[in-house]
Structures are given as C-alpha cells and as structure tokens.
Length: 430
Ligand SMILES: Cc1ncc(COP(=O)(O)O)c(C=O)c1O
Image 1 (tube, protein in one colour):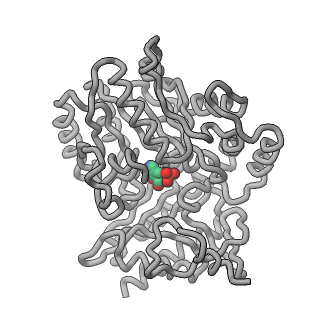
Image 2 (cartoon, helix red, strand yellow; image 1 turned 120 degrees about the vertical axis):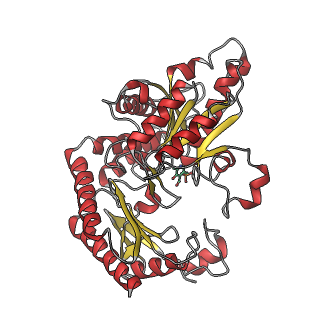
Image 3 (tube, protein in one colour; image 1 turned 60 degrees about the horizontal axis):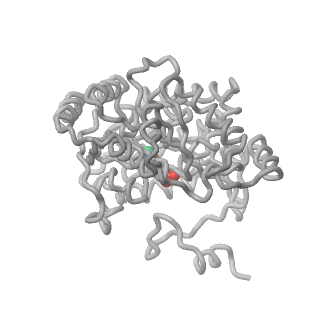
C-alpha cells in the first residue's frame, strides 16, 4: 500500500500549487481546537484558521453535533419552490445581526460566489430600473475570489494573467492607507463624476490577500457616504472580515451605526459556518430586492446553485452563531486583539520590519526585503518552513507574515506563536 502522499500525488490536483517544485504534503489525521494532528505524530497550531474559515476551532463538538442532528432530518432540498427552517432561521439571525437597512439574504456556495451574486445583483438592479450602468469601481490590489466576475473586480496579475483579456474592465481607486486617505477620496469623487458606475466593491478595513493592507474606518465611511450621495451602490466584501475578525462582528456595520453609512450589499462566507462547510451569503436592502419584483419575467434574478442553502451548512452556521452569542467567544476575540496590540507596541520598530500592523484578531508583519516584494518572494518560503518546523502553520503572503488564529486559540498557543514570530524577525535581521 503506498503512502497517502503518493496516492494523493497520483490522483489529486491541489489549489495554488506548482507541481514542479511542490513541497511534500502534510497529511492531517485529525484536528481539535487550534491544533492539527498529522499522520506522522506531529502537531501544528493552525494560526491562519485554515484559510481564514475556522473561527471557533476545529471539530468543535457543538457544531459537529448540530450538523449530525440535521443530517438525520433533512440533508438537502432544492431551494427554488421549497424552503426549510434552518435557512429561514439563519437568514433572520444574520439580518438581526446586521441591523437596520438589510432586508434579504441570498444563499450561495463560498466567498467567490457571494461576490458573483453581489455583482450580478448590482448590475441587474440598474438594468431592471431601465437605467443600465456598466462600470464597477474597486480598490487597487483587491482580491474578491477566483471565479470570473470576482477575478474581474480584483487586481490583475500573476493569478489571472491567462484570463486577463476576458475580464471586464473596472475602475480602480487607491486604497486609503495612512497618508493616502485624501487621494482615495478624491479619486472616488472623480470616478463617480461619470454616471455609468453601478457599484463600488471593497474589502472593508483589511485587504486580506493583498497582504493584510489596513485602513481606517472613518475614511471608509466617507467613501460610502460619497457613493450614497451619488446614488452608487456599495458592496462590502466581508468574506474575510466578517464574524469577528476585525474585533467586531462585521467591519462595516454594527447595530448602532448610523443607517446612512451602511453598504447596500454585504458578502459573507469563511467564518459563517465556523469553518465546517462551504456557504456564501449576499445580503441586500429592500430597495434592491424590490427592483426585481415585476410582471416581466426578465427582471427575475436568474441565479442559483445546486446546493443553495444546503441544510447542513445552515445548521453549521446557526450553531456557529450560537457560539458567537457566548460571552467566552467575545472575550477570546478581545483577548487576542489586545495581545496583538501589545505585540505591536513592543515590536513596531523592529529593524527586520518595514511595517507591523494589526486589526482585531489579525496581526501582520511586513518584512523588509530589498527589492522583490511579490507573493513569490523567497521570504515566504523561508517563513513557511521556519514556522512549520516549530509546529505552527502560517502561510505568508510574500514578505507579509500574518496571524489569523481561531478565537479558541489558548493564551499559551498564542504566546508560542508570537514568540516564534519574534524569533523569526530576529533571524531575518541577523
Ligand atoms: C475578501 C475575499 N473575498 C472573496 C474571497 C473568495 O472566497 P472563496 O475562497 O471562499 O471563494 C476571499 C478569499 O480569500 C476573500 O478574502
């Protein structure tokens, strides 16, 4: 019998993997809390929540039980013409969490499809009103997923070069990082002088895949305000930032926010099901929904996936929301965020770093690299191996090494990860 790695090599094609120089795969036998246990007896702290999804820890018994119970009642049903309680409850709860202004929840499969749905909703909204608008405004260096619409509103580059000629044009504005706030605001004002802009899509407060690029809430509110003034729809892609990542439940809204500073559409996924099952949500206002109600069939939103609102994924999401209601979860988010801030204060001037930043549970160290700062920077290979050797899973984005742990990470595991980060900073500086 050949090893799991050999069988994998013979049968599987992994994502984001260049097979010419691929490292051996780590077979994971089981996982619990923040820990992954490999088949060869090693243990890893999953300090990136397995691609940012696993918010409450692995194999959480409560979520597992709820999925198992649901599987015995209703595992799947077509979601056109039929409905079920877990989906309705989830939609009601998400609307309640998002607060005033949001009215309808559309289900899809993952982050990319939640973005596809948002873009199609926004474009068809204008089409249905007989005021067609074709342009989408985005931030520079954005990442919204790997399907075609999501790629089109993301940065052009290595990841989508073969498809570039097929991606629709978008208008980009600078990200309002510190010192560039006014550039961003005036660029948006210029862009919106053209009345063909249907929507502005953005990753609120943190651009994840771009390298955990952070900007402040006041500027974001100003950008949303400008769009509202020009009657341009705003789409907050909270696929990564949603469910506590930035220290609060959602980056763009809290229930006390001013109503008029809210986006029109919000995309959610990743932490939604606690990292158990794939699911995406696109949440919109009543005004958008109403534009699709008509005696004219052509105004229908013709979008759906086989597994739309899968009951097992809904059960996982409902269970995950139950856990968010526990004080312990909120305390954990607070504890991680506060410790990140302490780490930042202590290390912000470390000579190995060009920048150190944090936003809630996300901590990102940007290393000085001389010239090359791309995703394919050598530093990322070095850092990945360094942390794995120490039993910590991190997946740097080029010269940016970041932590985005599950909220159940223990104080000791968090300290161990931060200590390893400091050690790596010193190794690079030497
Ligand atoms: C902000 C954002 N939007 C969309 C996506 C795409 O999500 P998925 O990988 O689930 O398709 C990602 C994935 O990292 C993301 O960070």
